[in-house]
Image (cartoon, rainbow, N blue to C red; front, side, top):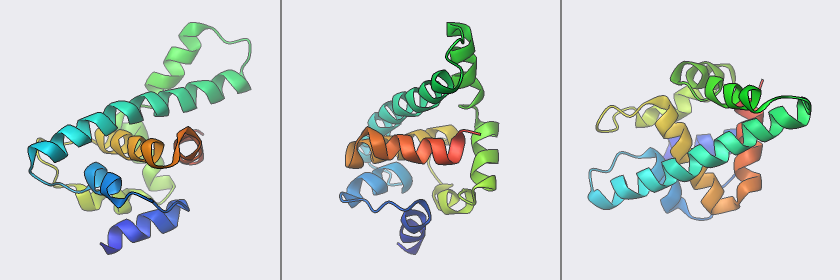
Length: 136
């Protein structure tokens, strides 16, 4: 798919396991793909939140637990993610998967993509993508 190639080129990361990228971004109406998407989404949610909260703590070492929690919550909303994706010229590259069944939200697709990065390239690949594109 040309859109997947463009996305990989834009973020500077090429997936070794293309099936992970497909599971995260391409709507395949199979039970296995839905299960894989949910697993990637869960892993991606954790990696995304660790990246943004870790960065917040590094930049604000005197912060409270509530500050860290608020940072993660602010940066995980659909509105925040859509805005950041537009600013970083990623939105159109992700929206080729807009026909996901069950009305997938932006945060679900971003989390699944981060999860795919995490599984394919490790935490460093996921963290680099998150901090470059979703941490202002």
